[in-house]
Amino acid sequence: MIHTPYFEIRKDALDKNIEDLTEALKSEWGKSIFSYSVKTNSLPWLLRHLREFDAWAEVVSSDEYRLARLMGYPQSRIVFNGPVKGRDDFLDALRNGAVINIDSEREIRWLEEETFSTPRTVGLRVNFSVEDCCPGDIGWEKDGTRFGFSYENGALKKAVERINRISNIRVGGLHMHVSNPKRGVNVYRTLAAMAARIIREYQIEAEYVDIGGSFFGGVPGKTTFVEYISAIREELESTVDPQRTALIVEPGSAIIASPVDFVTSVIDVKNTAKSRMVTVDGSRCNIDPLLLKQNYLLDLVSEGKTYPGKQIVCGFTCMDKDRILEICDMPELHEGDRLVFHRVGAYTMQMNPLFISFFPAVYVRDGELKCVRPAWTAEDFVNERPNK
Ligand SMILES: Cc1ncc(COP(=O)(O)O)c(C=O)c1O
Image (tube, rainbow, N blue to C red; front, side, top):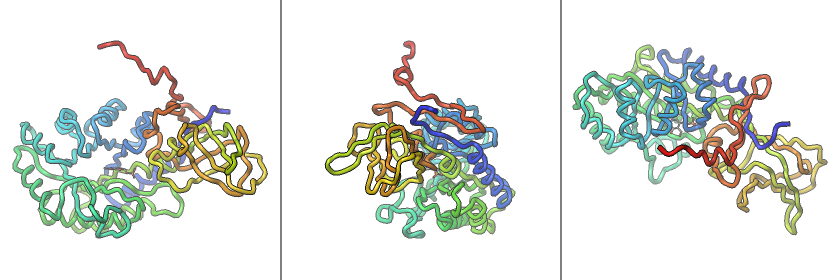
């Protein structure tokens, strides 16, 4: 038996998600780019694996940009987003053919301070009150979302005009991503309709519309890639030609959430005056680093008889708050029993803290189980490098 705790990636389910997405893009659009959201899970094995499917990398920091380069993504297959790009990497990406979506004034300033000997296209991240158009879907109703240039107050228009005045630089793309927690199709219709409106109003010759990420993938009964992309097409096709304007999608969760399990073992069970406490060798930090989840898809591997009452499953950290979940009328857990949490591949592995225990191992199931990241040891943590 493999030593717990560990993550397990089911390769067949992962590949199915990728294939479903690429098929949907092919059948419902024309020219398209699948750019995987590196932040969602930046496991090196995964980044290398995605390259075999011709995926691009969507990155939002210099560290992610350099990681993508290290994993073999040329600049011409990188989408560089977000407000915290480093100047040197921003310019390196732009000069070497990456898709760059400008998110801040300082990036416009960088463009103005440089000279470009050949024509380059950039995109702009759009900010508008999407939360008012889709009540209850996005959140942030009171203060609005934080990224991009505001369409409503004229900042977006000014940014387009300012960039188009720079020699050899023009705006040729729009970046529409919003975090869409319910992942409903209506939000994509709204984003696509707004992109179409801006393209018409500002007469943008659009090389691409980047609709962002936040889709469902691989979850039975939820919206499919075909449904998302066909809804986007319906809103955009009277404004842009799907054979000439690329649709960029940046999914992360839709690709890697559903194929990943986290396996942990019971290491101690005790009754206190008030409760029955079960301690496992994984932590809530491993599968819910922001401590937000209310429930989990879970299998118990236990031969215990049904326990008539509540058992509180707690993680290995020394925080009393590290309570993963409460189970009622479930098998009585004993030392050595295993708990398998499903669909936990997004915003988990790369957000694990180095707190008390270091990173758990990651395995890929491809017929047999293969280790793609051994559990970190104290030696990995120390990682002493010779002085430069
Ligand atoms: C700009 C951008 N693109 C794509 C994504 C991926 O979202 P998801 O993992 O929900 O698909 C995010 C996530 O926050 C993002 O900020």
